Image (cartoon, rainbow, N blue to C red; front, side, top):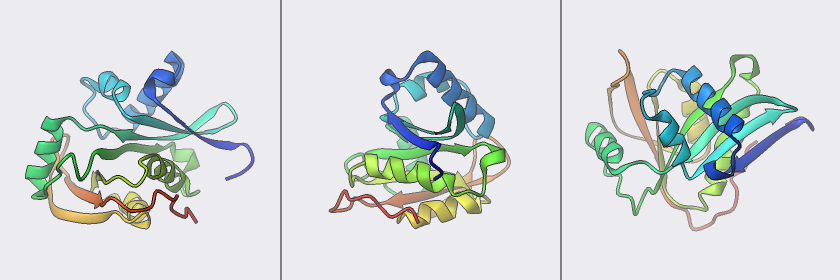
Length: 175
């Protein structure tokens, strides 16, 4: 990271209205989530991660607290148990603006979320054709799990990735 880039991790309630709106705008720019109820889902996330350069927002991610209905739906579709006790968190809404891609920023965002989870288990979902985020998740010991399933949002498949709890909450090397 250059000296002007910063990763900021905040609880949604600690964010300004502008920060929340900017975060939501980037989630929408990713085009992968249902817009209905998005603001509420962002506000109920465990943590939001922002990557900035000066005043410019380059990317986002979140450590989410998935609802029981969503968790059950993903579990059934992928054929993998996602018990809250084993996987309390979901990493999601990882998005880097197009002009800032290929600079390793998704690793910085995911690293911050993994570190904030303090060794607890988590899962993530991704389009099966999004090889870049798959590599990022695999770097942080997420494993492709279960069967791909049809998205509710479009004509594509989604893959589940899981990361089991670790004994150590030491940060994972981002390089």
